[in-house]
Length: 130
Image 1 (cartoon, rainbow, N blue to C red):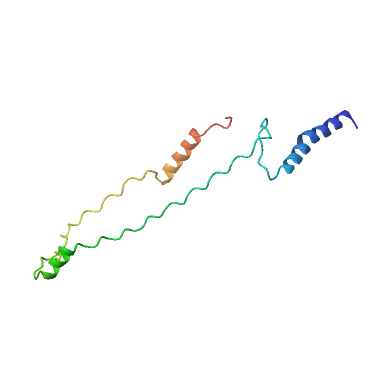
Image 2: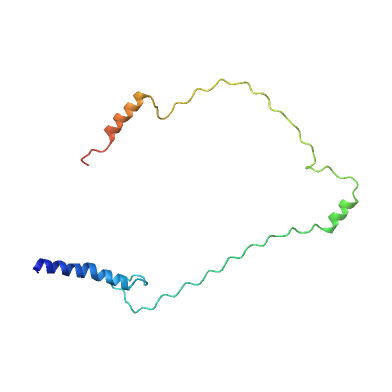
């Protein structure tokens, strides 16, 4: 074996095989940064967050007893706003307007405009040497 072969095997052993074996031996553990002391105690687990209390639906308060008596004894009631008939109004017929001219498009698709766009694309693109 020549010196070059021995140096190649040493490189392969030190920089490829040994780090791979160390990684396999630490498979379940988190990686430790270089220079980090190994004998520190494990960090304490975080406490569980308390579940949030769900808001309870509020029950509507019962109406006061005085209001019930007044409704029971009143012979005439004012018409409530909910039962008032709605007025029906028809829209006035609008005079027909002339059809609007189509607005100018941002990009034109006629052959002349397409050719100009291709030319400007070639002019503005980065040179091949960049």
